[in-house]
Amino acid sequence: MLNRASLDAASPITLWDSKEQADVARYFRSRPDYEATPLRSLPGYAEQIGVSELLVKDETSRLGLPAFKILGVAYAVHRLIEERIIRSESILACATAGNHGRAVAHVARQHKLKARIYVHRGVSQSRVQTIAAEGAEITLVDGTYDDSVREVARDAEAQGWVLISDTAWPGYEEVPRLIMTGYTMLMIEAAEQWQAAPDVVFVQAGVGGLACAVVSWLHSEYGAKRPSIVCSEPEEAACVLESIGAGQLHQATGSLQTIMGGLNCARVSSLAWPVLKTGVDACVCVSDDAANDAVRKLAHPFPSDPRILAGESGACGVAALSWVFLHAEAQPLRNSLRLNHQSRVFAIITEGLEQSTAGLA
Image 1 (cartoon, one colour):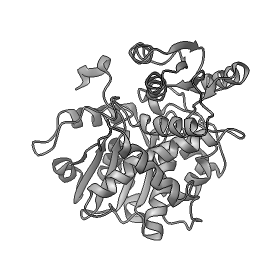
Image 2 (spheres, one colour):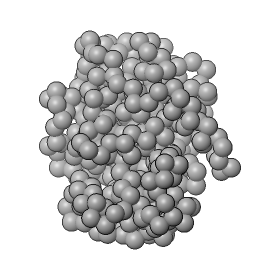
Image 3 (tube, helix red, strand yellow):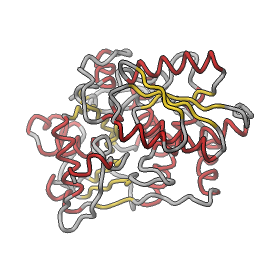
């Protein structure tokens, strides 16, 4: 756990202006297949952890795919087509741990484009198969997710492919910025769905793209009155926590062995880092056991709650909030964030349950 709630920090950077934010909503609402995902209330879960209200944004089904990732990819590709960076002969390429690559392949197919998706050998076969089913050409990479990011970047430059990466590095930041801008649609919807802003928001990290989008959006929407923000990530891939603790970008020192495949990243996106460095109030690491427990509780809910079939990465935020509210060692964090039985809490279920792990439900 890293607690920065009591520290004075500079205002986080906002990655877009009001005109571009309006363009995100206009683009998605113009799509005939657009439908807002539900904001679900979990009163039974809220009572169990001791808060006034628990709201979760259910991204287990979004634009035909089981994860939020398509929001960023669809918006970025839309903008790149408008700017004529993507043409009819373009090949889209990316590295992925699953959901991002499937979204790139899906959007490429919708636009009658080819896709080259690089996956490291630790990605489950079921995820690879769902990407291939979208018509993408798969390249298997030895090593980690970060190795696959480097390899596809090198090959895309050599072959003239259009790289659609959700992580950034110096010299490659505009496409990841567009992807993060697209992610804000889920926050636009949430603000229209809740009756009042929550007191605290739990958001997953990974390379930091979604967390960056949420921090930027909350800051631009609420300013100094924004909710507190807690970033959650696997304890074996805690690149955001370790970077904030070091005060600079820092590669995760964990084993990178976790069931939370979508969050199994060793490095924070260079574009997300300045926003997270100044805008996150606390970081919480989640064990695989805790993620599994959250998956089961969401799938077998309290009688008053809806059933949600979340994947392990998707349930990471809920697992983190359970730890914060139920464990004695988190008391200093609860105090600094002013969390109590009257608090209203918001989390994002970022992905649905893989078919191959449906037995957990």
